Length: 84
Image 1 (tube, rainbow, N blue to C red):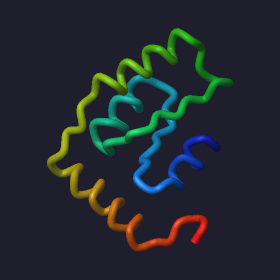
Image 2: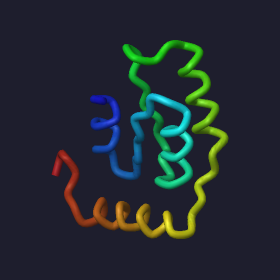
Image 3: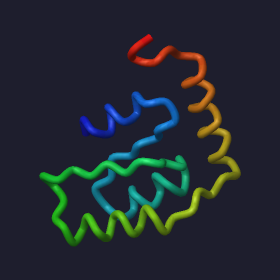
Image 4: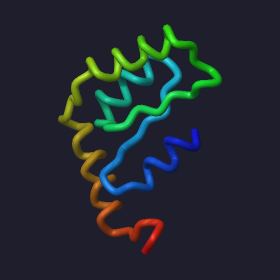
């Protein structure tokens, strides 16, 4: 969880914390995540590989989801980052 929170403080990063292939696929399909965070304490190596493959294979759908991603980008532009 902490890695996703920290990553999302970086301008341009949309990190998703995923624990299964469904959430990984939809994080990319619907939110255009560009960073995938995995919980090492709750995910074994085999599932981790499946999650990564699902995330990489899912193209961003755009359409109605693009509006949300653009809103996130605009908030990021308005709000100062952690250092200022």
